[in-house]
Image 1 (cartoon, rainbow, N blue to C red):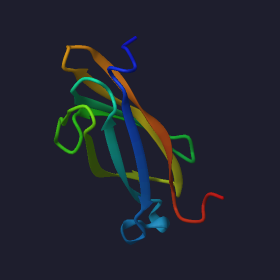
Image 2 (image 1 turned 30 degrees about the vertical axis):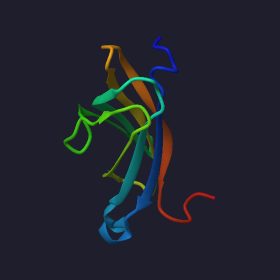
Image 3 (image 1 turned 180 degrees about the vertical axis):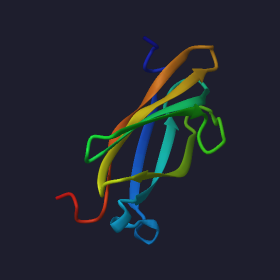
Image 4 (image 1 turned 90 degrees about the vertical axis):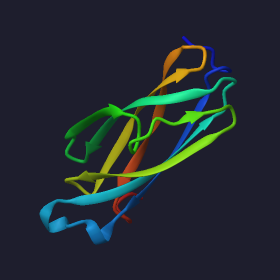
Length: 127
């Protein structure tokens, strides 16, 4: 397992419901999420790819894998952050997202940075 001090990636997600693009009658609920990725480690790291697990209230699971995020593979120096916004669509008004970013450090070490689970929810759906 990589040394936590060298490879310390902090990930902070924030989700928002998009009522203007959603259609509950059609079971289409759209959300945006903004992710801040902060390199609190000692070495430069590059985000190479992503793996998302998206689960709706019916327990339907979508897995998404791909290179980079929003067409980029950002290189983060120690102390730097990268923020991006993307979106997801569910068939239910509530769901969750979690996953990982596959990272490569300047010393060649490869590791996963875990994305903490966060809720996708229409306002007032969760108490």
